[in-house]
Image (cartoon, rainbow, N blue to C red; front, top):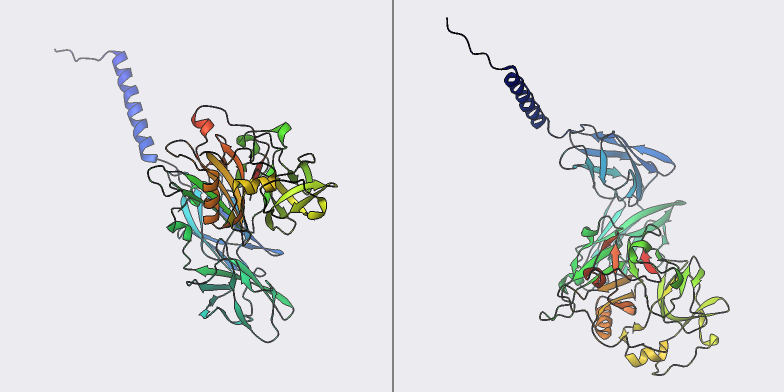
Length: 482
């Protein structure tokens, strides 16, 4: 009889192990990522003195709030997401966040899959009596839907000062703004009407407005820098001087009048690079100050952090208790900051306290020369007459930084680049750039290799020092916004 072949024991063992691994891999491939079917345990919102609870549909991917009982303005609602363990939010970035629910809001949640899942969140404001019979700007009638008043933008309108004509029911009156004027370029406006002893809030917005910067070489880069308030926008221009043969790249950040301005850093004795300065508080935009021998005026919370020790100060930007930003030449007298008017002179004489006005600022920081005043580009001689010196800053092309204020109270921060085929700009060219983007006054900060601006801790321009493997310069302070 012929003997059957019996495989050696070791061979059989390897075959079994191989089969086990093949089976295991097949099982893993079939499972894939685990998706959480119900990522939200609850979604609630602050409705005045009460709490509103949303209805969640995982099938339809919707989060729907019932009609609010107290809120009539849904432009800034505090919403809290109670998540199922293993799920986490992508948009908004935090479980408790303030969101605009005047229109549908997209919530993105990671449920364990490859891509986040989008839910549409909607809400309805408290149904209120309508005290407004009609609203218009000039001859253009506005449309009204609930508590939202929309005006179609037309040529000739001033988007920064839209003056409305409201017709109200008998007994109703406008509480704010008293002048019925709204700046609708970066954010919606708020109208408060008193009727029957109750204040009712309406959202005012413009539709169909085209940003003029987009037709002048600027691109809107706001979305690339993460979540920002609606009143802060970021733009980039790769050909600032319209010279294709020698391009110059720069960024601007525009902050609406709603923004809060601050100053981080403690001056010369505690100079730090931008990466350390931006750790001081939760700010959206930071533009570095200066690292030169000039001593910057720094005022924080209404108190001097650093002052030029009795010497004349350079140009200064400040924000008062009302949130109004302006620029002036400043000097400290009797423990107070004084602002001084423009001098049309080419030589400097010491300032006299009586020529100035006390400037009650909460936040202030000086830079170096003022380059734009009352809409006019200043010459090197004029800066000497107002600052005492221009220290050679008007010579040559360089990467430069500046900050300016518009006629409507917006603040514009500029930062240029001088590496990677970007040639930089002269002082006068930068002054013209600031004027062209809408500033009526502007002053300079750092120049040469060290200007820098971050938005949500992301770099805008390429810093020359970093590009050349050198450490970033230590700065006296940083001008910040949120």
